[in-house]
Length: 130
Image 1 (cartoon, one colour):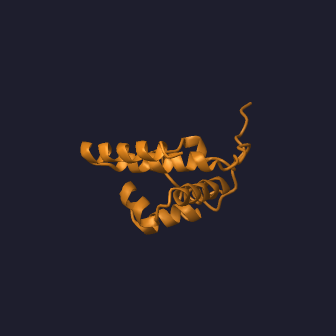
Image 2: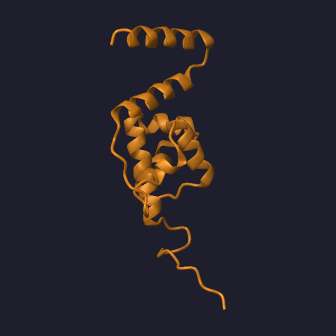
Image 3: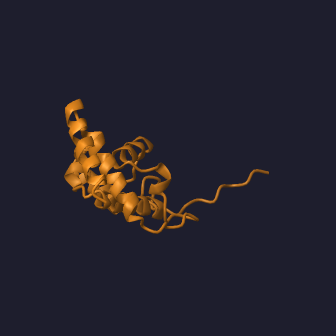
C-alpha cells in the first residue's frame, strides 16, 4: 500500500504557497539590508523590476535557478531565503554581518584590478582608524 504525500493547499499547481511568500519576504529583507533598490536587484538578475516585486510579494514563485542567482547577488546562503518557513528560526540580526555582506557585494561588483586596489586601500585605512 502506498502512502499519499500530504499536499500543500494551493489554488492550482502554479499558485504561490506560504513558503513562496516567506521566501519573497526574505528576498526583500536581504535586498533592503544591502541598500539595494528593486531596479538594482532586477538589473543584476536580468529580470524586470516588476518581476522582482512579484517575487518579493509572493505573486510569482521563484525558480530554483533564480533562487541561486538571488543568493549570489545578495551574497547569502540558500538556507537564508528559507528562514521563517517550517522549522527554520529567524536569526537575530547581526549588524556587523550585514555590513560585511554589503561590502562584499560592492567588492564583487568591481570591474577592474585598479578599482579593487583602491577599495583595499580605503578599507585598510578605515580599519586602522578604529
